[in-house]
Structures are given as C-alpha cells and as structure tokens.
Image 1 (spheres, rainbow, N blue to C red):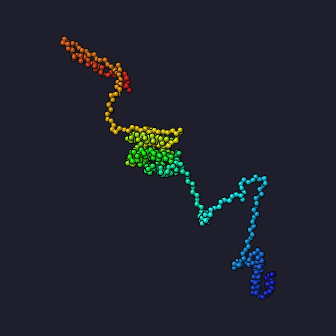
Image 2 (spheres, rainbow, N blue to C red):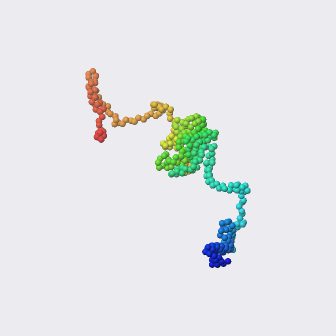
Image 3 (cartoon, rainbow, N blue to C red):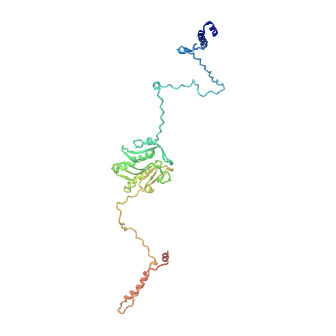
Length: 386
C-alpha cells in the first residue's frame, strides 16, 4: 500500500477547507500505515499488533523464553593406576536408620516451633559429695571460690547441721564453709564420738560452737604469714558444744572434768592431721583448731595440753612441812664474820671479895661502842663519790 500527501491532494481537489481536512485524513492514514507496519513486526515477535491493546486488556500472553542450561562439566574418569578407595562407595554405604513413625507426626504437628537450645551439662558430683547425703548432714553445695593468694577451693559446702543416727539434728552455729572432705570428717566425728559422750552428760548434744571456718588470711592472722588452712576452707575452730539441757561444755575449760577433755583429745587427734589447743601457742588457749592438712609421710600434729582442774578454794596459808621431809640445809657462817669477845675489865676486888662493877661497866662501854660502829670501807667511799 503506497500512501503519500501529494496523491491525497489530487484525489480531493477542493478549497482550502477541504485541503485542511484532507491533510488531516492524510495524517491519519499515515499513522495507520505506520501502525500496521509496526504491528507486522510485533506480530513476528509474538507481541500484539497495536500499542493501545494494553488499555483494554486484550494483550496476549508472551511466551517464556527457553531457559538455557549451561553444561556442567563431569569429573574425569579415575585413572587405572590410582590406588583403590579406602571408603566404601556411596551405593554400598548403609543408609541411616529411618526415624520412628511416632516422631514424624510430632514434627509435622509443630512446624513453626524452633529448636530449644541445649542446656549445658551439669558438673559431675565428686565421690565425697555423693556420700555426704541429707541423712548424714545438711550441707548444700556452693560455687567454687578462687580468691587472691590461693584462697578458696573447689567442692565446697555450707555445713548447717549434722544429722545423728536417731534423726536428731546438731546445728552448727554459725554455718561453716568447708571443703567436702573436711565437712564429712567433722560430721563423722560428731556422730561417732561426741554424740555418745554428750548423751551421758545431759540429754545429748544439740549444737556445735563454730569459732571460725573459712577466712582468707595468714596463719594466726599475722600479716605476711603463710596462708592458713582456714584460707583453703580446710579447717574448723571448735570452742564448745551445747547440750539438750541448756548447758555448754567448753573444750578448754579447766573446770570440765579432766577425763572428759582427755577423751576428746584422743578422739580428735585420731581423726584430724592437725590439732592445736592450749599449750601450743597463745593463739589457741580458748578453742581447738582442727584441719586436714596434708604433709609428707602423713606427718600429724597434736598439741593440746590438758591441764589439771583449778582448786575450788585457794589456800590462804602454806601447807605444813611434813615430818618425813629432809631437814633444811643452813649455810655455815664464815670465819670473818665472827667477832672477838670483848674483854671485860673485872676491876679490882676489894677486901670483901666484891668487884667494882661501876668501873668495869665504864671500861667495857667504849670498847663495845667501838665494835658496834661500822667502819666505812674503801668500796663504800668510792660508791658514795659516784
């Protein structure tokens, strides 16, 4: 189809008005021609023929282009001289066991839930912690302590009470922070030795007076001294234990019967590696120190002097010297200390045989006065000058 403006003007040879209308018709025909030519090109590519078809929703669907898949290179064949593979081939490997049928519905029922984080494994309890049950002592575990200078320790407990075989509880006042082995040794000592001994005194033991347990300090609280076993939570200071009748038995009181204190001495020295009491040093005059310190060759220390009880009434006068006592030795006087006897002038004897006493006394008086008056010596003179 050939369309041009010159030919169109020839077909409608009218006035100017008609020429203007003819020009418009010619422009419309030109646009129609252009649209038809564009439509043929678009149709060849599978697109709609007219650009205004999209306005009315009559545009046909475009065909999707074919996806070009790139060729994936295959691995090279295994050379014949290669050694045989150690692992089994994939086809020969056993398949993992299938999940039980009961687990599949549960997983399908909760597809939206996320997996919960796994809890950290709990630390395994020591043999001492497993043996120290609530039937022996009320001793809950506490976290490990790592302080300055090596203070603290691991496997620690807070010893609150000791359970006797008859289910009675002996309170530890205040509660002691100790290592598990030390707490177990204290509980065994109270259950086995102290409880039967206190039963004969006044209805049994009711509490244990804890003077000191864990404390980060040097020995005897001396600045710069070696770390005490109290700083390692491996020692306990016991001052007394209370009875069910309200009385208190002090282990260092001299009014307590001597045989009772000696029994306690043999008991603690047989169980603990260190025992310090009265007589060891003046730091332990009012309590007993117990610990489980480890030394070479299992060396043990037991220093506790059991003193005799004091008399009820102090004697006012010294006791009489017994008859079987040997005679007292008296120092003999030296020869220089002996003085010559004064010579007494008897005077003259008159005819009647009487002595003139007045004269003799007057004569003897100057000599006696001269002997009794001390003479200053050279040493005394020198001392006086100083």
